[in-house]
Length: 312
Image (cartoon, rainbow, N blue to C red; front, side, top):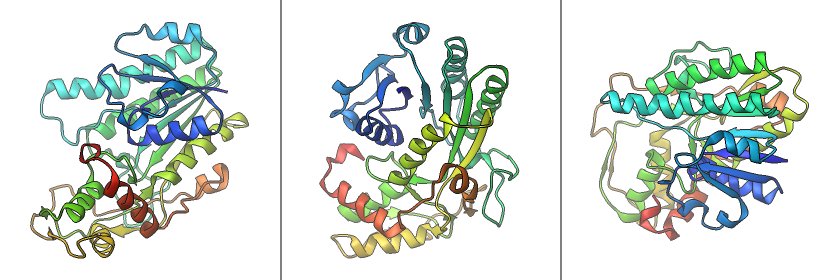
């Protein structure tokens, strides 16, 4: 099976790429010419690479018989500051994948697996199922919701089948500059870090489990009965930032930390409880998060203890 992968140089995509290659899939990787390649150096010679900013996208579909598109690429800005940043969000998260959909329909691609986010949901006091109310947290999440509408349109007007995996708080090796890498860096380097009280409770989900969800989605799509499905992908266990600080402190080489909980106030729209209900994924994708938080943090900490500082 030939997979067209976007976002393969990023945190999640690079792990998915490792697994696709290990499982024997043929992979065509779309990236920007400016993308950093340190996450995929061992795989560059094992995939077909195209720079989307230098390549006529349709020619990729003309040259290769693509079976499935795995769309993991995305541009994230928590709060856009100007029109240029807004345009980049629209270009990356709506216009570019919409072009992929148009060519997928034209060249009879069988499936399109999209990446969504739990930021799309309105917060509630109970675990969030796929039926939860949609209320985007930020403009990034709004672009994700907009594109999912377009994916739904294409799957209802073409032979294309679609899946959106809505990810809940992924973490792990080779991560972006998010809360867990920041905490680990502080523990390893013994540097100060000022945080809120850390009472936010989220479904932190280890990257190995996230990768399993993508692989299971590819397999599910082969016999998918409906044209379009959405699945929440996340741990059912809620953990607070304070929990993570305490766990990392115990495994830190310093055995102490300079992390100051409560040093900064919560944001105006702080997400205090966003927990995943993944029962649908468990039933249909045969997927469930298996990695306990302590185990995932141990693997992540071990990686950062031996990796170059430029890699986090």
